[in-house]
Image (cartoon, rainbow, N blue to C red; front, side, top):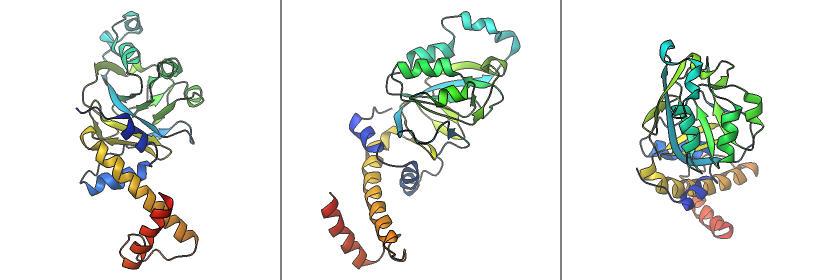
Length: 238
């Protein structure tokens, strides 16, 4: 997997998941939006980071008593301590929010270690506390029971499924108020550049629509006279 540059990540912090979704659709990727996952609190900065993954399987009672947390090599604990600075910890909880994927203590530890965010297709306990952290977090819904009741940590930093999307280590994870997109690392540079241009055009469109212009010929841009006007507008803006 490619390592994506900090400059590309900075570009992605300036674009929306909606724009990324359209860009990826143009490239033939239709299923990159993690389903049924939402931010615990709206209005936080756009989350961008390399995917670092944790996978759960259904818990087996004889292998998953609460005493397993005493093991310093327990994979959930290892993931919290080894998730790299600037990465996003993505948890495959099999879309099962009946037991928590993590809680506020683990989220706080990730935050203080400089991790960029936390995503699960399950739920979090202590969700109100996590929401108030200076930390991006996304889940399906709140869930009080410990993960041990239903989830068994089985693997770290290998391909997973999260909310019906394949997530590979070092894919780029972008989250905003709409949800979370997964960008394959191999195309992240091109996506970032294209999305910046798309965002610039969307700013132009919004300005024109707010001034009363029809969207016909404007959005999508098929009118040559509007194309000429856009190019002039860009020169002023850039």
